[in-house]
Picture 1: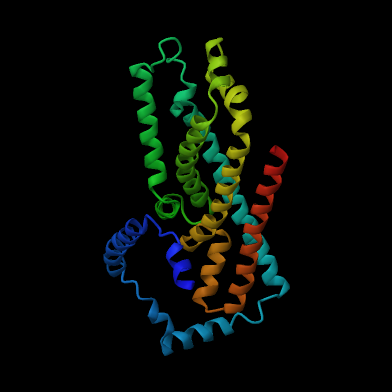
Picture 2: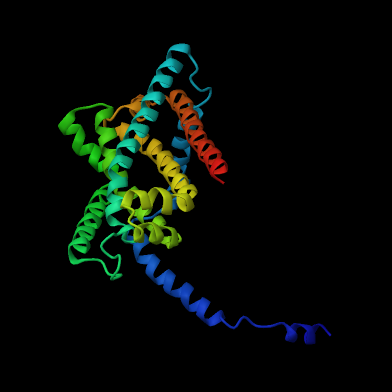
Length: 278
């Protein structure tokens, strides 16, 4: 009875493909792990465990003196200001570049249905600019800019603006390209300009996705601002770097908790805006 029931169970028809795929993935991944010197077992030897326990034990209790909390509050506000200013500048650059790179908003294709060679050349040049901007991480931009404008948040703001302009321009264009084209086409065929087609044709349908991605990038900018602080761009990251050099675990614990609260707050703002747009 059990034998017949076992025989009646259907076999997975794709088991050979899954097995071959897993083998290929392992063959491709293994040399990469070797090249990256991935050795997670080092974390569990006696010396590493002792150092980890000693470092984590210094986190308790977190630093909570009034003077230090005031310093952390000022640094946190500097981090938020850096991320917000950088995002604002990035959007100022990304929105006009999105207008140029989005083929759906092209006026030259009206009538013939094909984009003119000049418009296509401009579009390719703008795409290349967006690739260049987002190819260089904001940390690298910050390292370069610190040597030009000096230490402080200015380098972080410009670094975020450059990298995120490329990211926002690319993703904004993809979101608009994937939306329903009927409203944009109707406006363009009736004499509307690019900006009007964007505001009244593409934007109403894509607003929720655009806002959600923008807030997500703002959240990423906050995290990036903290990281850039380690290279002298100011904010919470610079304070964390100073505390790490002094091995002040209790100060690090307080700043890590503040950092978690900052990201949670950005996520709450994103959820609230999505609900309002929905």
